[in-house]
Image 1 (cartoon, rainbow, N blue to C red):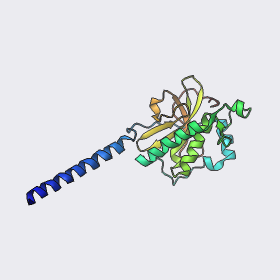
Image 2 (cartoon, rainbow, N blue to C red):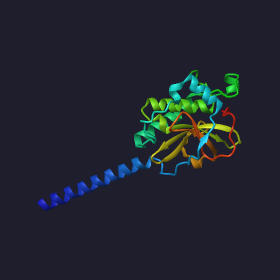
Image 3 (tube, rainbow, N blue to C red):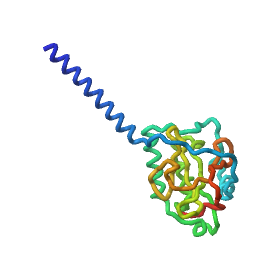
Image 4 (cartoon, rainbow, N blue to C red):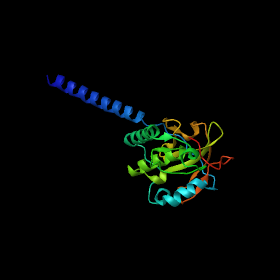
Length: 208
């Protein structure tokens, strides 16, 4: 009887360990696979719309050197990012700056529920920063999209690589899988921009 009881207890412990391991594996599977980060190649000229935005919302552009330069991705953090990205993409109405403001390129926080590409990303960053993520690790980024036009996305610099939040899709991809040409992004060290190696820099990011 004692041997049987010991055997059963051992089996239960092994099953519990297996179950915990399987649960942990499923949880970790929800996180993106580690990937490479984009290289920074020096200083770049800021987008004019961003300069005006920073004058109106200086706190949104300020750099806190005490904040982490990368987001440590956990299942909970990743779930938050996925949720905010999807909610903003479905909650705002896409409209060009020309239609909205009568201006070629105006960066804003979409207080009226409307905006174009950069406004979507600025709202996402604000919500994620308000939830506790490092603003310094979330950088506005300018790319050339599949139509050859200027477009703004949000780069999340994480301990598993650089991932892109985009209003054209709610799928969060590593930067190099987006199909975009990466031009430049906000610096992590100062209120400035850095080059990502793209040759052609758009004057504006004014598409939906």
